[in-house]
Length: 297
Ligand SMILES: C[S@@+](CC[C@H](N)C(=O)[O-])C[C@H]1O[C@@H](n2cnc3c(N)ncnc32)[C@H](O)[C@@H]1O
Image 1 (cartoon, rainbow, N blue to C red):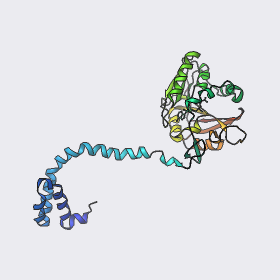
Image 2 (cartoon, rainbow, N blue to C red):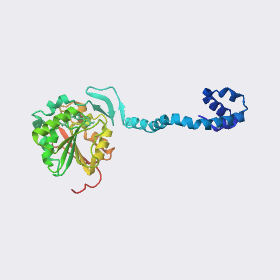
Image 3 (cartoon, rainbow, N blue to C red):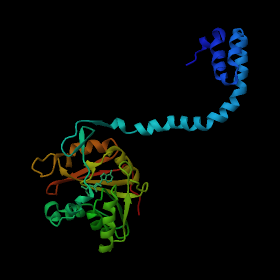
Image 4 (cartoon, rainbow, N blue to C red):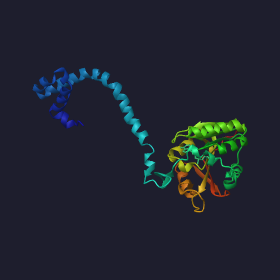
């Protein structure tokens, strides 16, 4: 870093710096023999002559580099402050968000488990549908839709609306497309997201439903911010998650969540708590809302 005392003391620093830059043109050795002040003005003269050429040579590299410095580290760092790491526990990723270790993601090999025949008997998904208070025009986003188990059941309940079956695994969405054809549910559409971005259309979603999915999001903060962006004002978010407070629920600990934990994680993204309804055998049904008035349809 050049400071004013270096520059104003005898001009030597500036003169030598420019001379150094001019070495390739053979000017540096002569410059050193000139007294300090003339060295300074000679250096200035060279600097002025060199500047346009240097600008032509370096600007194409300099501008993107400076822009990169301005934006890239921020986006690369963005979100990192939300997470810490630990030794991964069994079934965990070792990534910790708000005191909770994030679980591993369920792969598309688990489709047969998601589609198992006794799911209705064990978890009563039909009761979830009854408690959603849907309007026929609603736009629903089934986030982490997996095989589309819920998307396909939801579609007939919103005949004038649509269901966006969203996931980060293309294999899951391919399966949803197959089910869509077999079940004649044209108002289901699939949407491939990234682990940090739902890619939902902004401000269009009346209800985002997350069944047994949120606990495995590798970037829960970014995902929730993205969901909030996709919600219409007054839009709701419903979580169906295995009850973390209950040790008798026969699910691995990292795949369960407590009401306290989910509520804390929703508060930081600006969602309002509406209610928790415990009518399901082993899962919570939690409702949150984006502030604002729901537009009439
Ligand atoms: C246990 S499955 C549940 C599937 C479905 N909701 C059900 O109940 O049948 C969890 C799903 O979340 C998806 N998932 C994980 N991280 C995701 C993310 N960041 N965004 C969207 N989906 C994600 C996985 O690919 C997986 O399909």
